[in-house]
Image (cartoon, rainbow, N blue to C red):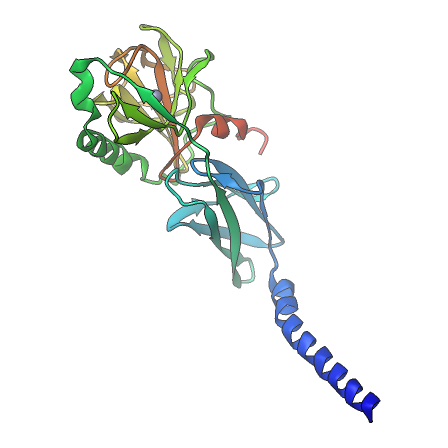
Length: 297
Ligand SMILES: [Zn+2]
């Protein structure tokens, strides 16, 4: 009898295990697409590539943190750039995918993506007294809102061809993402790009082909040009002493859009170069390290 009872318990246990396991197996079997995120984690202000591969896929759409993630066909499947806002709390979030197939069916997959701390340092900067009004947070907020309203717009066409380049090969004097305190004040601003060591009056070539969407002096960025490259990618060039383009101009990679300078909130001459992907400023060094190249995709 003892053995019989033990056997019955074992059978029940097996049935419970099967019942628990079956839904998981069923989910695995109905997932027809393979999703690959090419990084174990994405840093705050960083990005990675995502591929969705499978037979008969006709379209892939994605959402991450309520922002659209644009997938386009490539040799390895549908590919997207996935960016994490610099302000996003380090945590794991779903990349919500809708995959459509030629037979008219579709499936939804929630792909977990881990966002890790960028480990950004705080630096103290000092500007001359005449520039102190530019350290007022309201000035910065207004400027960020103005630029964001443009670079948050998604252009479904691809304007760039090939890849992206730095506007100058010189060393960096300041890195992306740092918290910046000006003249000992407690307010911390964020560095939305990288600073390249370049004196005044050096030609500034555009990183990739695109369409100029902003060209004007701004309080903090000084002489500023913002270029839309399509597919949610924008590059910005700040502190220019001269600007040679106006909104609406089409530019090709390497075209000189202006001259370097020290206009706006600066401690010296340099090129401030910034890149936004899907409405988030991301680290230009990370972006260039992806080696995007339309010729090989
Ligand atoms: Zn800068």
